[in-house]
Length: 415
Ligand SMILES: [Zn+2]
Image (cartoon, rainbow, N blue to C red; front, side, top):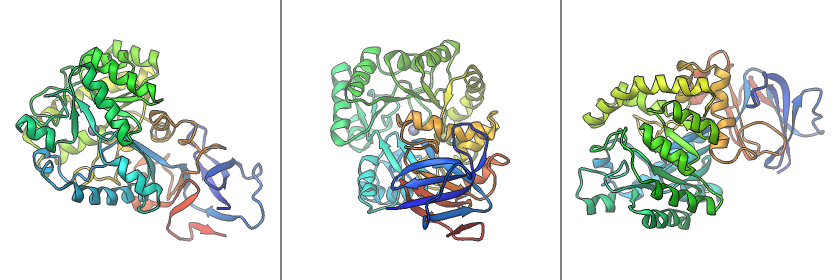
């Protein structure tokens, strides 16, 4: 791999105003970023000139499920062959990359296998940080309540665990299989039939045991946490990111600020379930629960944002027509609807998202020394952030210095 230069209008993800500049890439890393007169492009360097459009850091989704889902009716999908799901998930990975997503956090899915195939160059896809199986208490959000327990344990994708020792073992099992971090459920949820998003799940001892195991291997824990108490339990026990966070209260916000936690609100799944859930046969009780908390989440989210809580993008998409991987930038649109400026939405999908992956020194912004993950989008996302959602608008995708996508046109030329 030699050098590569990308020249044009740059949004570097740090929050700095856009500027006309150059990203100079050497191998898999960024060597230098700056204004045109600050960066000398060595002779004969391959140069991508962006005449119209914008250069951005590769986008990041902190909450996807790479498990080849094609329905949110888990009573159906639980019985689909895992081989079929794996094939679908590999297609989903290439869709993500095509849409400009160069990194994702797989918070329960087949990511531990997909990343091996991607790293070996066998399939196309983003960098993946995977939790593998979701840790849930028996009868909790990760359980499938309509099935007899032994069937749920066998066909469900969660690892049900109870008591601090068993929770510790469950966390160790995920790391043994190659997980990068641990995903737990500290409250009930929307798509679990017999629990409530407001109910706390796991005891403090159980959560602490899991966090301890993660920290021991230099990793972290992400918690599905919707209810007030479960959110606070998770933060107090040392969890890094709060997923959803609908019922967060003032004390929870204060705790997040003190501990530097990141909130991943996942508005996209909520919007999809409410607007199209019926069409795609989401169980009725799930749609009802989602409708009940939509307004609450919006109100509390705005409070958290105003207080200065760090917020990162996550869709909770798992593939298929209802939650299509590849349309992940819907989350930026929804953040804009909730009061984010386009620049804030972009930072939630780049800089802050990289923190949620524990990779802020490696990805998330266009700065010297980081991996050369960048995209070129047709148009200006600062005047309309929704342009990012259309895969056709993503003209160039570079991951680790490798050009993964390049739609040739007069707007983006190569010399
Ligand atoms: Zn999820």
